[in-house]
Length: 71
Image (cartoon, rainbow, N blue to C red; front, side, top):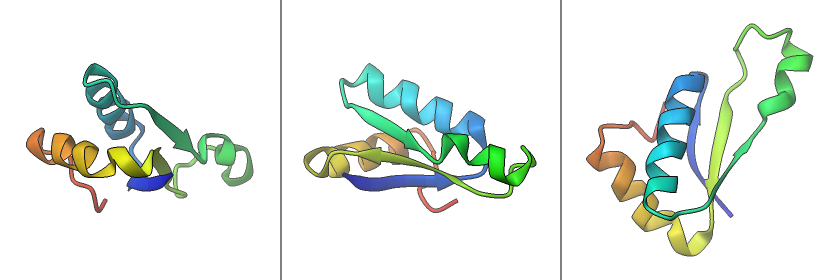
């Protein structure tokens, strides 16, 4: 799996997941439960992962929808 997106904003993750699922690309959100360690203040970023073979297409889909990959 490859990291596609890293952000502190949960709405960006949700939007990206919806876009990818709409195109049939499986994705997995990592670091969701890290909020237990940080006290739910949102300072540690979450990561969105995709399969290696889907990374190029997924990145293109997010760029086409103005989702910044380097947040």
